[in-house]
Amino acid sequence: MEAPLIRRATNDDSAAVVALAVAAGLFLADDTEPLDKMMADYFGGNVADGHVCLIDEQGEPLGVAYYAPAPAADRTWYLTMIAVRPDHQGRGRGTALLRHVEDALRTSGQRLLLVETSGLPTYERTRSFYAKSGYEAEARIRDFYAAGDDVVVLRKDLTNTDSG
Image (cartoon, rainbow, N blue to C red; front, side):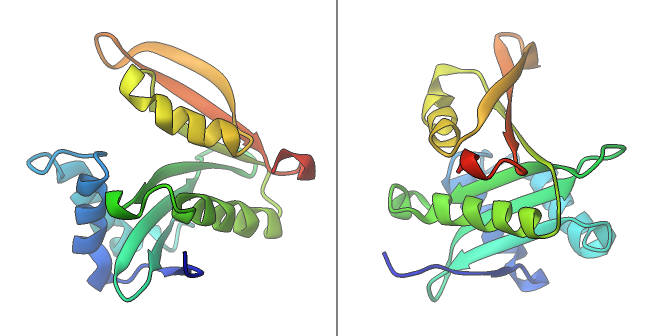
């Protein structure tokens, strides 16, 4: 893998972010309204509130990460989305994006990074990815997304330099 070029998203990247999220299976093609709204809000003012959308590209966008501060919490952040185009998964791009996010947060003195994902068996690969990156399952809320679809909250202490 060539070293990824990771940069902040521009308004011109909005369609590519949506396409990446759909291709990676995070959203259905006919149900991208929440993502469209997230991107519109991002460029409409959330950047000023600390939200960050990153693009990993090699001539074209291949991955995306979005993270934001947790409201009313001391130096705690949420990784809202990380996605890599399926034909580039398993090549270290997701790990590079995640490390970039973590390093940026550590450099600015942040404490915790949280990730929420589904507890369904189809998300085992996602949970394994985070576990390999030093994240611990912190909580499970049953039936959060839908009946039978729990949310699993994963946590990484950014002040612990041994955690990856």
